[in-house]
Length: 331
Image (cartoon, rainbow, N blue to C red; front, side):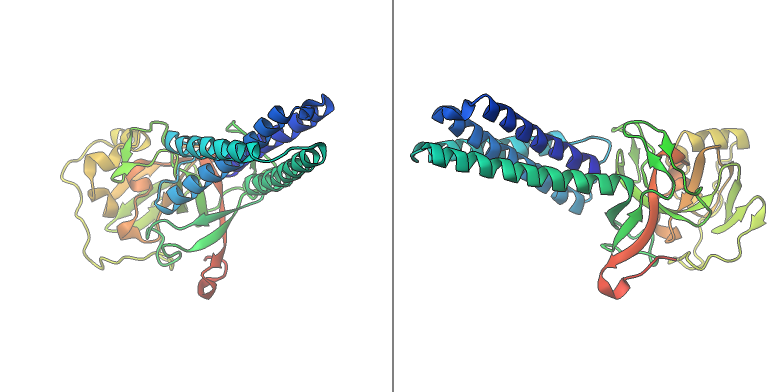
């Protein structure tokens, strides 16, 4: 979302700079040019509003894709709104008498609004990119730590600030720790790849870190083992199926092949629900993490689609701010 806001801000800033340029060149002495430029201003406003509305509605419907700036559908809605708004404003302005005073007032108002929107949007995008971002829980995979439609803030700077359009981070305040709840971009580079019943390409996920780089992880009958030691205390884990556990898969393969298939993100496709309760052993690769949902019996996580590279981690779950009854820091 922050990158989307940033480019909307750049669009408004471009309008503002061009307005100053045209004003210096005395272009607004032409009534026709003034009508066209005023219409373009409204076209930009309605384009931006329609695109962001489409993004917001898509987010509510679970179409949260961050790997692309704007989808073709969102751009189409924006262009339709821009054309209709621009034509309507141009038609309305032709009926008005544009004297020098009216022109100056019109252009001044447009420039003030451009400056206001530009400043607000750029500031919001920078804050969201560097410091904090709002996130909405889309599924029940983290129940009962988070419930569907919980709204929370994500700490974006704690694991470092990512340099835009690169995989590099700077100012790493601390490393990812076991049991951290992280928000990350789903590890897929192929929009056609099917995981968890559909394409997860570019979507934001939220899970709990269980395996750190170099850890040996295994799950036996739903019980997690880290470096061959059973994890006894997992107060956050929930097992809604009780003692009904899937058996070990009858299709056994050598450990080195199992590791290879897991890192290639095809383990879930090969063994289906068998990996839910009996998984591994696998070794978490360097620079990557194994994550699980707290709702272990209803979570599509690293058991199925592999580890999460560090550069895809966006931040740490920080604070539930809505609903008020659940306000507070997650545990």
